[in-house]
Length: 415
Ligand SMILES: Cc1ncc(COP(=O)(O)O)c(C=O)c1O
Image (cartoon, rainbow, N blue to C red; front, side, top):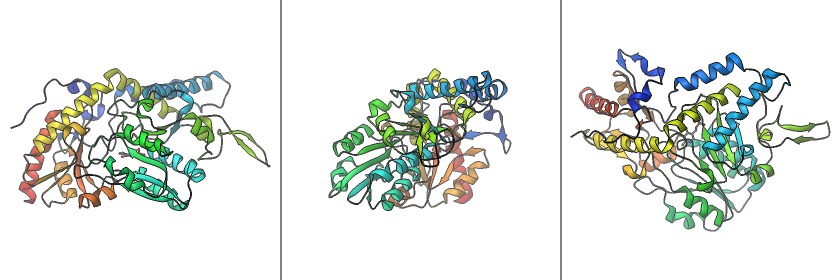
């Protein structure tokens, strides 16, 4: 029997009014957006902040000496300070604005990896990684003659911390990289233990927080990480902006990733020297309006409260796992509700995930079908693809009911 979650920590019905996208219908039905892990929807507060920046404050930042330029720069740097506070970074110099989490991880893989990895070293990732935190490490390790190894998962889809010593055997561990929340299974990993273990080995720990930062409090100092990657578009912010937090002492010793305007101290024919943090890593014209939008998104999330968001999504995940279990032939992947964020991956019998998603779309139910950029995980699960429903602060329990009804309909059509 369907059980409605009790005591919702936030009022999702009320919050939805902030999101213009929900005013629309698709195929004549109200949109049920259950794909927030791929990208979140945007509240008016973010859209208005960007509009207002373009209307009143826009020009390139860190360039002109005139008042408008100073206003634009102050808005951009204000957003950096919001990002700093959001992840409790010790200094705003440690926040590097980039396009997204992928670019943030590539920056570390190239800038740190090209100068610190070599034969006899090993880079360890987990079997649960998004390709963004897998492929760059695999590539750089190979290029530098280092080993690339994978920490396995248990049958619940949780990282096997007990296998760390075995995986590391016989090599010098230099990098441990993992996500905090898996985009495929919603698994919340114990990254503080991973970070502490990495440091015992003399390695750096790189945390992919793309799927965590939108949904729960991420405190870089508590995590004990060396680098943390965040994407803005998954946390109510615009596309094209994310950030890397890194420890200043590491960032200072690293070479730039991209070269060009703004990131230099002095350019001469004989030699070029680099600017200070964070500018050394922000070559070219900055995504200023996007940063302002991200700052507004941070304000929006902070006003609701990250703990409240996490608690609400936890209830949604528990409710979804319970309701989805009613669907005949369903296989639910991943850990129990108490170890997962608001993400549920599943397959229904031997129906192709794309067929399932397409039939659901006829009722305006948007879910994902595919490998979710996690092909090593799909191999572990023994499937080519799954369906995935993912939730956010605006998701309603009724929408999970509509998903379940939709899956019964899938059975009628394909069964
Ligand atoms: C866990 C995880 N890491 C990294 C990424 C990459 O994020 P982006 O495409 O914004 O760089 C994603 C995107 O889905 C993700 O879910």
